[in-house]
Length: 371
Image 1 (cartoon, rainbow, N blue to C red):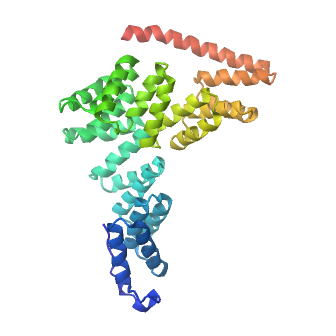
Image 2 (cartoon, rainbow, N blue to C red):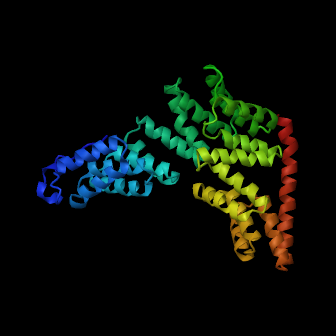
């Protein structure tokens, strides 16, 4: 992982200052420090070398790895980009994608990973990471398209099975998801299988059963990504908002970039009228999925509650234009129009709400008949 550029090592020893340290010694020291986990010191050595010899992509790659290990992802991304500009390399691009992934910039990670996959379709790590990014962005169908052929060639890979099953369930393909669950259960009771079973029941509105499976998943592995988020969502639907908030906070303690936990916790705090506490969670959810209608609605509702009526109206007008079936947004927009004495506009929004509710009621008997 930590390689030294041969050309860089041929430079004059005298250029490395009063300490008389040769470039070879400096880089050996940097690598040793990095391997020992003394990242801040290694970073200093790498920067010192690159200040004088900037055209060393391998050293920039090492520096990027050290910076990422220290949680300094913005700097790591900069170094990986510089290294790629000097030496196009799929391994460097994969490291860049990982830095984007760890900084929760999943959209940027997807762009880099798609390039890696196009260059090397057999790179399983890149494809799996790409599938996970799509899942985090709510692009369930893309995850399914990526992993379905992989599952055929890797039928015993539980990582593939779990990601694919999760995408299928979230996409509403519960029967197909159940096949994946059965495969995982053959290996014995597991937190992953219980989480998938719980999410399947949650999507089917079997909330009591979902709670039981999610509770069991927590008992088996409380560190499983997403388990507290879904447990909180099930508690929220059942009206236990206090425990739901605790569950969302537990999820965010493990993964600050969980979209559902940020959105739902922000929404609950908004209902509690704790707008200052709600805003950071909603802003983080919007960062993760900028165009998500639910996030945009919650932010507009906070904006309205804070007395910024014009701004909230603009946000809601843009939202209903893009998502005309968003009933709650029409309701809130009608309220604003009536406050502004714009009766005609308010009446129009109310008529839209009535029409949407009637459409929903008409679909309900059909849905029951299909079950």
